[in-house]
Image (tube, rainbow, N blue to C red; front, top):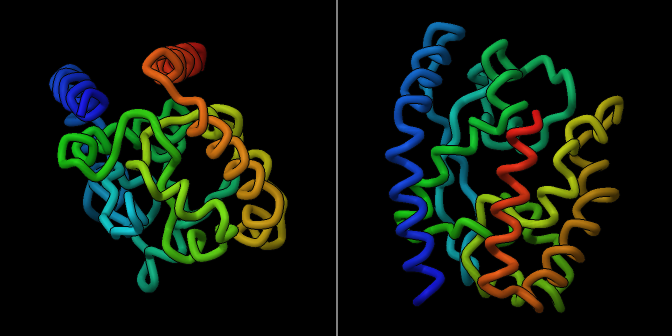
Amino acid sequence: MGKRAFDLLLASVGLVVVAPLLLAAMLWIRLDSPGPALFRQQRVGRHGRLFRIHKLRTMHVAPAAPERAAAITAHEDPRVTRAGHWLRHYRIDELPQLIDVIAGHMSLVGPRPEVPRFVALYPPELRAELLSVRPGITDPASLAFADEAELLAGSADTEQAYVERILPLKLRQQVEYLRRATWRSDLGVLARTLRMLSAR
């Protein structure tokens, strides 16, 4: 309950603070390429419940199967719009997830939520533990793989490369963090996230 109250307070204040930036970004997205400003995609949340995550749209609208096409993005992916490159670089596309925190689907700090087909690949001994908490906007694994798109650049199959090379390492870090997470460690992750963004 304390973590939830903390999430609600910070997410509500944060959403008010970044509202002008979000509105400006949404206008830029609409002017830059056809399609909606917001992008929603199905993810797996706490206890395996599905929810639709909010992001700013950073890709051209795909004519078919947009959810699968947008799952993994490599550096210099041609699907990414001009505005999208900038929004992704500064992680501004993730800010609408403050709405998901307020709605109770996510937390500020926790394992990043994955699409169902990736969660199906979780080792059984880790799945229940990882899905026992609300997924987060940021976590140590996200910080460790902040350059994920660059790591996947040049892969013939970016999704396969992600599943084989990056996902197992992320899962290991996420479980290790969950097992020792405290208020202080969550604040530390938020502080590290803000420092990373300010350094970009």
